[in-house]
Image (cartoon, rainbow, N blue to C red; front, top):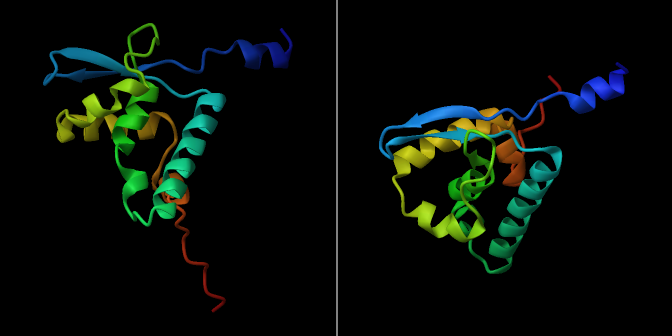
Length: 130
């Protein structure tokens, strides 16, 4: 098999199981495809820009956990559980549960502190020359 075919046929979007006792079920967190990640990044920039335009310092961060979970929570087969219309309903759920799932979604999707800060428009201080 050619390297190209090997790469393109690799199953690299396997969902990760998470037992959620509070909900009485197991949910799965899926890695985003490159297209999904681009859409996620663009959505975050749009939310921040819209909030800044309104003078709302925190508006772009409202619902950020739920927005990521809508994109990544799935069933065992990888089918999405929620859609954009469910963001407000998820926002009303337990913060502890959403935090736990959000951290898992961050890990599964390579959204570490550096990536989150970049989305928020923050940057690390440049190293000093000394």
